[in-house]
Image (cartoon, rainbow, N blue to C red; front, side, top):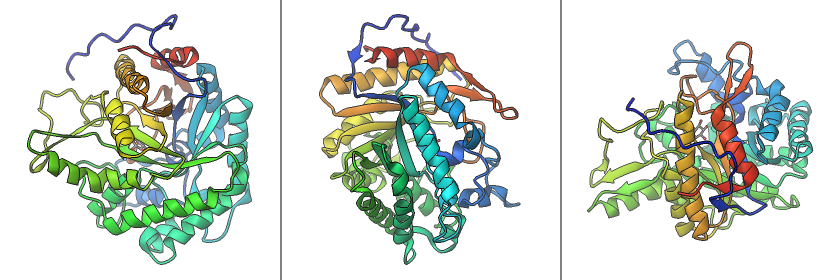
Length: 406
Ligand code: BGC
């Protein structure tokens, strides 16, 4: 790992920088499978525990957030954040086709109430990579009745969304479709490297499922509905502009276009992909990388919100952005640059409604526990949470409601 630049100093009294509107969400994000633990009815759990599993580690108890969510919400509040994105798990709500668990609905309603009681705006995700094992076994999204099954689940969740103002239907449909293409529609190997173009029939089924879910939620008073897209910041080398446009359409832009009439679009950005005439160009071996092997490129966030705004008129919520690192100074450095870029976009009039950092917790990174994205460390045996200095640094910006100046 190359030497890091000195991290930016803590903003003791934050008076400079770009002010954000009072309604701006300053928050952190998680997903159900990555934090709750024992998501035994899900397709990914089935893959994790298979004797020949391609995944190096199982999720197991994860962060035990299914039980420790009040502690997680206290951390969000105590940091001075005003928003929390978390997942509702389909496999828990509908453990068998058509069988809705009232107990699971009650659980998630308590989490929503827990947010509201603490003055935290809940941002709810209805599908974050995992589906019930029965759904996959019956052919998933592209099978007859697949889209309707998702709509039925969303219908089951609708009664508990009272007072919720932000709902994400499907997280990163583009990643889901690309990963499925890579493994021929079989088991999801979410520890993805270079990804093929998405399985187009799956992409279209996901778009139909998203629109069906938006329809189901249309009459929930005050609720904004959208989906979240993995923005990959495709950058063309000279001469590769057309190739990059094609590359980006199938892997990203068609999913943005499908959100044109939504209440918001979730932008998720971590790094960039440079495209030459023959496709992606591997970064130079000396390039600074993060624990996931991705290029350290905090400028991705600004590029992603600008790309999204140039493509569709939909208001933007940054639903994920962060870095996998075991060096918390490096997290702060990344965050400083990413937020400064967001401030530039905001100052230029890009309609950004909030920023949710990935992640609140060091959690299960789809096959392993190695990559730590969290503002908070979690002891894997005791589940004790330890808030990192970068989280306090971020919290001070949130309290001051100011994005750092460049
Ligand atoms: C996903 C998260 C994941 C993060 C870091 C996003 O693609 O939505 O679940 O942990 O990136 O890899």
